[in-house]
Length: 110
Ligand code: FES
Image 1 (cartoon, rainbow, N blue to C red):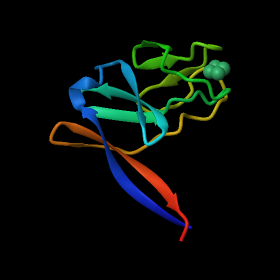
Image 2 (cartoon, helix red, strand yellow):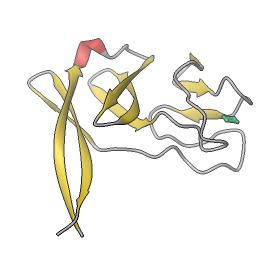
Image 3 (cartoon, rainbow, N blue to C red):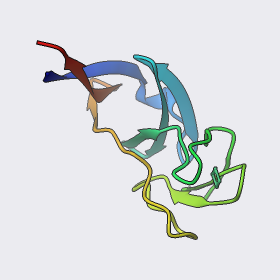
């Protein structure tokens, strides 16, 4: 098996709300994006408590609260702030001429 890394286009940087979040389906993955100025973060749209989606959660001061059981995650780092839950799964992001791209890894069978 070989892993291939590729940069997938997402949106214009200003489509991602400042201090907020938005989710997109990309290559079959539900991904959560947030922006602090020119800094964009990307995480799996999946709470690390019971894998439920976070995109309906409340965002306040850069922290999203899971709508199911209240776990809180820092949107800059994915770190869980109020429980001993692992961080959100993160994906590398880059900005190319104001467009956001996310790095995904695809496994192929040789
Ligand atoms: S599923 Fe998110 S806190 Fe339980």
